[in-house]
Image (tube, rainbow, N blue to C red; front, top):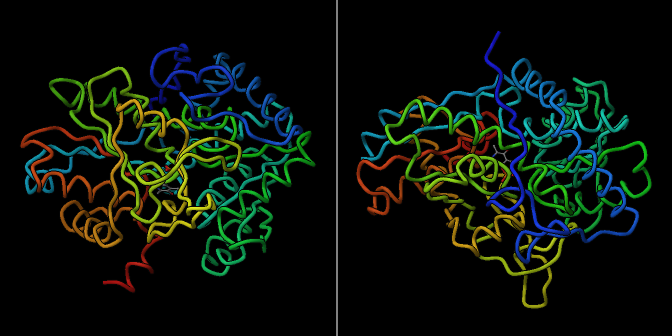
Length: 401
Ligand SMILES: *Cc1c(COP(=O)(O)O)cnc(C)c1O
């Protein structure tokens, strides 16, 4: 049998990337801004999660699912040819090799297992391009739960294949016709729906966003990326710790999970956002979808729609913990254009034989730029999370190349 991924014991409160402070705060960000009935539901999720992660039985069950169904641990691959070209030592944490092709499955299986433990029979989720919806439908099928996925009408038109995939997996896909009929509206609608069914349904949030406890719970379910990478770096690198840890940031879950594994080290954290969805780099303080964080807004405080060639980076905000890490100076957030990301995707394909998801290509585009501009010193070590594979983006790329 495969070696089981560690699903680590809880990190005590107080340390960076441990538990949030009182009332689900990361500094001035986070919190639980929700209608009263959802505040109660969130409290139940919080309590169940705290119990579950302290329970060795739960941790073992999740580790087994991750090993047998997801294919964890994922490799840490040295990008040999590209490293030589760039003059740095680049290592890729291969979330593209997981079942369903991205890191989203790590979080979704954790929450699905938690839902089962709470006696819930159904998962509710929102989805933009359909990736979180497909992951949720997959986890629901695996654990014998029902799945209801809210999706903007416009996204349904644009992502017909993922809609089919969700339905094939047995999920119900509900079109959302309000607002811009995209992810932001689907999220609002999913939360509204949850109000009436909290007793039998668990709301499965797809990133480190939403009301407490979601931002840190999702980060803890994604911590497996960072913990595995840390152990793999210890075996690969002389110092055991890379100089830089880099990941793309939509809501910020693959980045938070990766950073968490290196929180107590001197590694420098870089979160790479799409220029048109740069909540951390360009957003302003606001409250949306249950938490206080940084969001793209116009002068009246209205949320501005995000635009990126990478559907997973198309969220107008960023998780509260990233806003906090940025303020502390523990992590930097930088932006990359669509063009740079496409260029990076082609470069990885041709040097390493890996077609990355366009989201992940953003992280790589920054590495390429920073190496070229001398921001990454020659010979420095860079760990980058390759959050997903590019199969879903092939038709987009085909139109451009
Ligand atoms: C959804 C997605 C992302 C962005 O989500 P985060 O929560 O920021 O990690 C990044 N990469 C891929 C492949 C995705 O599917």
